[in-house]
Length: 400
Image (cartoon, rainbow, N blue to C red; front, side):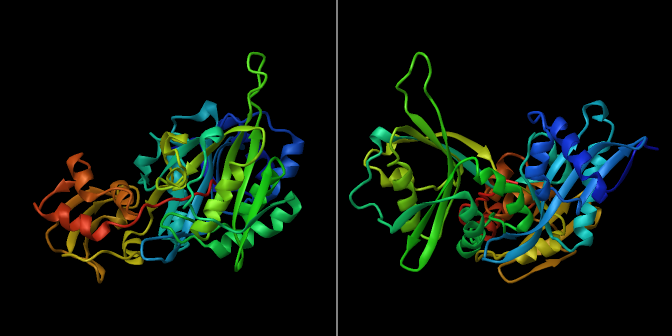
């Protein structure tokens, strides 16, 4: 018997939920002005609240999106955000109840996948989420960042004001398309939440032979201090996407040509971000961190496995354990042609969070087997699994 109930959030409870979540996640003090700017991007739909004595004590939300998987398909998914529990009600099962209800809601909606960015990495594995993409943080020293003569050259880069950016960027991101495994579609709710931030920085758009094909959103950060009065500013890249290498190179050239700037910092870039290879001095571009990116949850294992493509190779039988959604537990035969439920003996035994780590290709079966995250029942199964699940480097690139 619990002393709280979990139910869908009502429209009139949005503001209370917004402020409760801010306190739970230790955001700076939120005021009425913040709500006026950000409230339109905080709908009640798809949010579940935990209530005790009529008071909101916990929250979990999501938005409908699509996620690109190996093979090029865009699969319906839930982008999970706004998860928090009030400090005086933690460790009482509130989060477990919220996450369980949210996953069951995703299943009812027919969404095979759920994804999130984890505020605390020790939390979400027990709900079946696994790290499915990673990202790196770059620091580029502008004074040393001369481009190679053979680096790609692009078209024209122009600065656009915030009101134009709000109109141009949604269509441009859709045109570029979430093609790389791990990228997600950005719906109207995402843009309503993000648009106020466009007014806090700058946006540049690249135009190539076929029209606009890339953009970067960034802000400047003053590095001057009493002891370093002549220190140049830093540009912090918030969002950079391009349809081709020429557009990507042109956007980096633009950033590294801005006057009075000492360095460009770029968090959340793909592991294969190529800007360093474009420079005459590759060490001018430092990787200063590699972090987990998207955490993925297979809500419907059969549907999710069937949605992606596989490499050539002999089939492998996976025995999956899912204590949160037990209907997923069982054996699956995975081949280049099909994924089916089976009663055949298992080759590999793994939990559903480990399957998520394999799903987009970020991890290899053999590597996770060596770490004892996968129990090997047939000696050559890890090699077969590597051949089937291997793909390019996944990346999300969209905060939510």
